[in-house]
Image 1 (cartoon, rainbow, N blue to C red):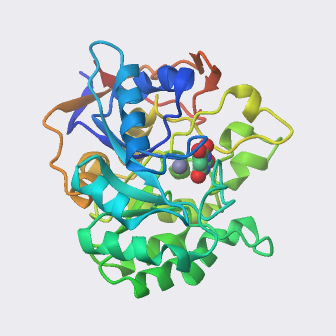
Image 2 (image 1 turned 30 degrees about the vertical axis):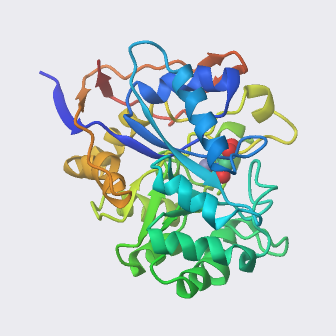
Image 3 (image 1 turned 90 degrees about the vertical axis):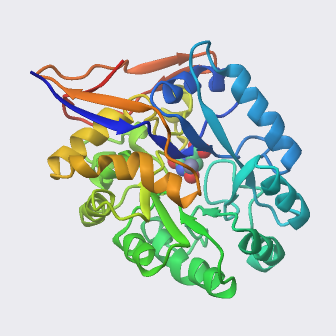
Length: 347
Ligand code: DOR
Ligand code: ZN
């Protein structure tokens, strides 16, 4: 008899779907298991206006294969020129669920992001007034700050001042990677949440660098020391409402990863749910997996849990998934956790 676990259908509260042929290739990987996802706006050019978000949403729905259902939860990319009125209208119509803050230069396609945080004060105040969450890529870009310290420094220099100056602003600390991130998330109330990725629960910086450089483990924020990975495991499996899944599944075609200057991003859409079941079982927290993947994120965004369910089964045989997804934009390597996973999603 195999062991089974049935959850409310999960949501991915931080996902990169891209556009065109890449979108068509990766969307089915997410829609197979997830009912909804917060879709990141860092296209080239970025999704800045409500009209652009509406058009992107239509392209996502058009790319969905027959027989799959999926609800994209759209975001706007915050620039220094973003108009508070456009944000308010996009939120009021129900089209846009959050605004994404990229410090300019922090990561993939962040060049149009924010340099001077004072220039977005008006937008942030409008968002606080209407309860629209700000999703934050929390890394400073100061070249003097070591890449492994950029998250902790961002919290002190940027995030905490923004939150103090904008009472009531709902903030999601995206893809936290440090014990400082965990602690800061816990210092907030119901207006502060934090997403945790699948890969940051599995890898530390040794996995990227020991015995050769492994480009498919390189992402931003970069994985940190083991002590930080363990803090993330403890937070994710705690059941606390402030922590929820945002995979940051971020496809790049293999030639762009296996490159002298490889792109940042791990592609985990395909195997996130089996890997998370493995992690939560290992930490004695299988009964809290549903909170992490299906309840806490929805509650933060003011959404009902999905009506459908997903069943996972543990068998003697290890789960199998393709090493790569073939997309019209090139092959995309699926994240390899580096150990056998015995949990499968039951179709
Ligand atoms: O690893 C990452 N990839 N981190 C990000 O913040 C962006 C993402 C991407 O878009 O590829
Ligand atoms: Zn991301």
